[in-house]
Amino acid sequence: METNRTGTAHHGEIELVHETLGPAGGEPLLLVCGLGGQLTYWSEELCALLVARGFQVTRFDNRDAGLSTHLDGLPAPGVLHAFLRPGEAPYRLEDMADDAVCVMDALGWDSAHVVGVSLGGTIAQTLAITHPERVRSLTSIMSTPAAHLGTIPTPRVLWETRKAPKAPVTDAEKAADEATFFASVFGSPDYPADEGELRERVRGNFTRRPDDLRASARQQAALVASGDRRKALARLDLPTLVLHGDADRVIRPSAGRATARAVPGARLVLYRGMGHDLPRALWPSIVDEIATLTTRSPTGFSRGESS
Image (cartoon, rainbow, N blue to C red; front, top):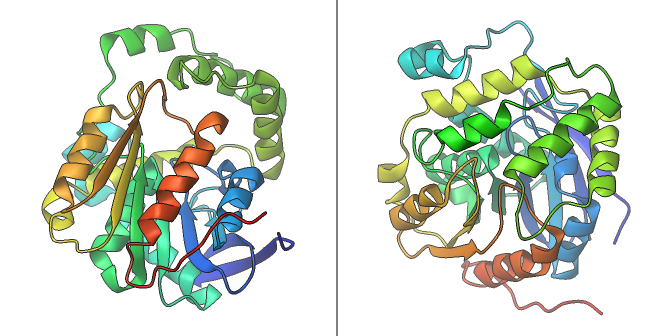
């Protein structure tokens, strides 16, 4: 795999940091991060599996995440406020989808296969709705077509999360402690995370850019304020894949089913024992599903795993 190429795209005054892996002739594939997630959520090892299947892969920091612009001067409304007064959200999913278009423009891509996880799945859905000519195929992973579907915590989850660390996250070790706790509650029961690997990744993310709770609140407000996409998704005419874990406690499987029902011809894959993460053991299957989907695209091409 070629050395990573980094760059910055611009959407007005917003700078969007992106990183591309794989040969220039690869089929363009854009990875969209979840709530507060940095582009490093898509590990280099997972990206390498995609590159081996013939893709040129770009991952990027959404606005209000990682090294991209944080809109510190804007309010950070809570979830209830965003539901009751959606007009006061500082931006919408449509704006975040336009960010993704600006990244594609900076790369010289007229279109791409788009893969989004969690909040990134809602951004990917919105991109397919608002800019269908830019999306060759859509993969929505552990996501939802509307903020109110599958996202209300159950009493048991609320009870378990009461034990979450209360101290402010002021250093990399506290960030790793917090991530380890939430992985125990929301991770994949059949595929427990390697704690050492998880802690190392979180420490690296903290060094790159500490979590910004107000920025994440603005992203969440964008999701809540952007409404229900199911009617718009029903008008899509492109290859669509919906991946979800049957043990997801953050965005329950009913939300994945709702997304798949909304998009004509969408393929739904429910992974037994997968929670709200991407277990390493499932990467080969996930990559296979994405690669198979893209052969249904009008621009799809024949490919095989490289040796």
